Length: 512
Image (tube, rainbow, N blue to C red; front, side):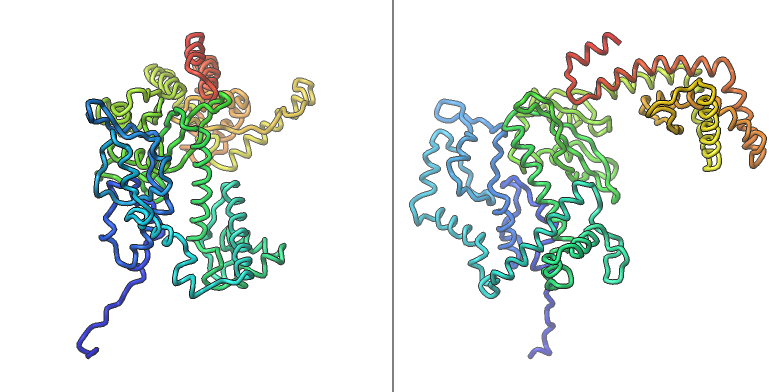
């Protein structure tokens, strides 16, 4: 009869969840997908992943009040600690009798109640020692010890790479690759210097138990990240904090949101802690909406049991989707928590003021255009940069020989040009300082290009710049902007201090 039927092929992907699918599970039980909607072979895995997360207990959430029994009542977050067997799940029957909390104990019931039976089933599901797979493949103590050595080696290597900010993977990790990436190469280096590890890793380990795959690396990194964020949450200690958000796109053009918590620890020191990068799901093809940003913030807070009512400050970049009186993320958070005051970066405001004022003065704007052109001409090639270094070195040697330049440690170092950035006027101050320090050298290099340039256009450009930089207007603008930007630079550095407070910052602004 088999010839009359087509054999159905079962894909491995139908039995297992993608490695990153766990991150897509919503933390809010009301938004979770019904367990019956999953593939039959995935049900236990989905349940286990939710159980590993633990119950959803947003301690800082502002629960809605209802008029019950003649009073306004709501859920008390202190009840979270009354029941340690409150396993997560999908919401079906809603409990809202907040004036009768004893009903919760009635729901739990006696020893063999439905609730306690379900708790026992969850414990059995989490106990891998009772599974059939585990019973069919019992590990000996020697195998367990080898596994522990492999795991510790992978964890130690991951810790080192994370601390140094190095990449894990290589472009080619095949058997005949000369460089398999930092993780595998460091593992190989470790085996060369440790015989105990060498006997149980890489080619001496089972093919499916080497603990070096990309999935294992990701799991270890995620474990480190969870421990770090857990420590940050413990530092906050159910206190108030501020949220700093900046958006960016990764190399695959996926919209991301970097989140930083700013708070005061128990010793009174202001701290800023990076808590993670959150993927933002786009709702339109043109730009990320503020609602999707708000949803990402809510998901992050729900994940770690935080609530927006504890937020006392919020700060963002100047992206268009983070501005707006009604539709921006700032407004959405303020509507939910009026105490979450928005504070724009004072240093950024100062940069914007200087930039706008300079653009209004055509002479100053034209001066910085000429400075940018000068840097492009003088530093256009390695040959010209070498010419600048050579002339500057000769001037230093002449000054030292004549006694005009002192010889002290840290002085007379080799300097080069620093190109100014459009929105960072502090970089323009450093550019002008370098311009003054290398002024005579620049004159010599421009004369060299004027005489020995590759073509007429380069020589003509050098001639025009040489004529301009020796004018009174150019020298006057250099010293004028050095004076103005020098004052702004001191204020800018003070405003960027992490331990700066608002009162002191306003005092510095007024005195400047």
